[in-house]
Image 1 (spheres, rainbow, N blue to C red):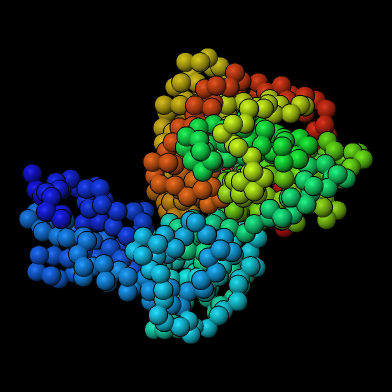
Image 2: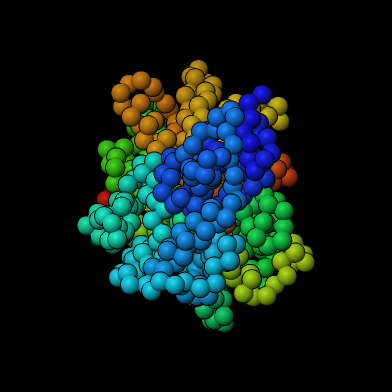
Length: 558
Ligand code: HC0
Ligand code: SF4
């Protein structure tokens, strides 16, 4: 076996790409700002420096482990060096920690505490650029940027958007949009993944909690809440529960205590989407037009198509997302209510804030969804209300939309929409068939999955992608004629909604647990297929009569 000596302890090299992974495997938490396993190595922050046996320093993130290396991770020289970096970063950093959105979650704050920085000797002489709060999804505060470049690489490498980049040189260097235009005017698609990797408060999710508190506290307003599939498995770790556990019942109870009048599950809306999308798919298969059918539930993906591939818009499903389908149903249901109805959607996603604000999703200027809260905002509201979340007794979803299928629940993880649609299309409704669909290549967190299903005489080719760069690669392969698909599911966030930027930040293991949590929740549902959901049946027979197109579909090509 090959070894590296780390602080006098031999550590086996087991395929690690860099010293940093090897050192972390040995149980030493080397500090970093700019290292993320899913992004390229930038090596700019210099926090992960280690000392070799000759007293030289090397960046652990960009040094491959070699047999016989002798390194030290915690020497007086390294401690001095790290403190100096932190002090310099803090010197031109806005230090309003108590009022910062990232207070308690900021890497700079955490490392300053860990390395005992009690005083900053240098004055902040940097310019104080204004906040960019032009986007409904994210807020940028350059005063808090430490130039680690995590957001830039995320936006470029994983999302293929390139809305932000390094600008200027030397002391004037910043991360900004081209020509410093407001981010809302750039080609940003609102996925929020930049905020998910930002170690400080330089990019954060835009908050709407004040508006929702106001609605909850207003007796004249009826507040109707819907909760997205991924949220139930996303907040456990932050509220004293096991990460990945399905906490829907407790979330319902918490929202009721906070003053919500009715609470529903977006999975019910997803069941409507399955019905409409399956019909649309069958129609396109019969006509042979506009194939492949691309899914339309991810609003960052929709913006990506609009901005980068408008020629593909006819291929995108005309189905509204489950959130919007359910939002329009809820507003229709309350049309004659004496009180004003406000619909709040709790989502794992920042781009849903943009979707809710789109003109297409308003009737007479009033949006179907009034506010979108991310899982992080919900957690903050639960904390603010003082509720002991762990001690809450679970409560059920309200009537008349209390039923959902497992197919709707798994929408929140990559491959879930596809699996739900296949369940609908399959002629064989046995549980053996359900199992064979699940093991047909649709599950797993990989960025690209492919499967085939038999539909009558035809073998349908299906692709599932998450992460917009993966979507772009697939589009290019289709355009070159290298490959062909009939149905393509796209989610902008790698891993699907469970890994949305509105969820608390977690690692790969935590993301896997969330996906597993949704599949476990599906197992607990007595209704497995969308067409078997009695709510769906009664909606088609009543509220949706003659209004299917108006309430469930959208034309993005205006
Ligand atoms: Fe998703 Fe959805 S599955 S996009 O990830 O389709 O945000 O969870 O709510 O709308 O249902 C997000 C999650 C949703 C929608 C659903 C879809
Ligand atoms: Fe790029 Fe997404 Fe951030 Fe917009 S929200 S800047 S698209 S990473």
